[in-house]
Length: 151
Image (cartoon, rainbow, N blue to C red; front, top):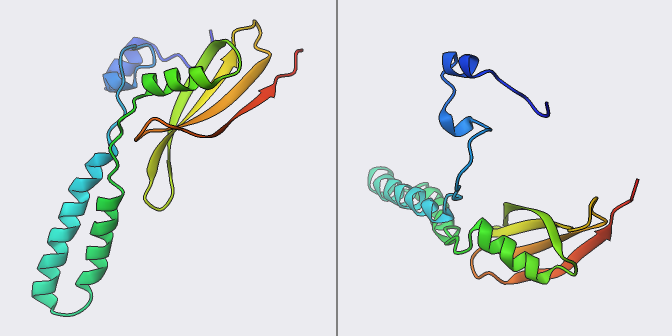
């Protein structure tokens, strides 16, 4: 058996949440970076309260943090499925297996999907990395491809 297997009785006794069950399947939606707006508004409210209470410059540090959170609140307009489809269209070979992971780039933390694609051969002879912007869906840079060693 591949991977780690925990008997169901043990998981139930330890009260492991259902969302950590590796055997479960279903749709997963990555949380939107727009949630950063909540933190921004909290920081801005705190800055106002500090400005009233302290009446000096220290409130501005909290306000700057709030502004940064507000500027980093990008909408994630492209989900993993759309990123995989966009990357598959850019790959120079027929696609077999694929995987997408999100990263945040730059001081404003713009969401980017890093998609790794393997060709349809068995075993795969090539793989590619395609970077897709999570906000506007555009491809970032060129497609990186490499040949895999055949053992």
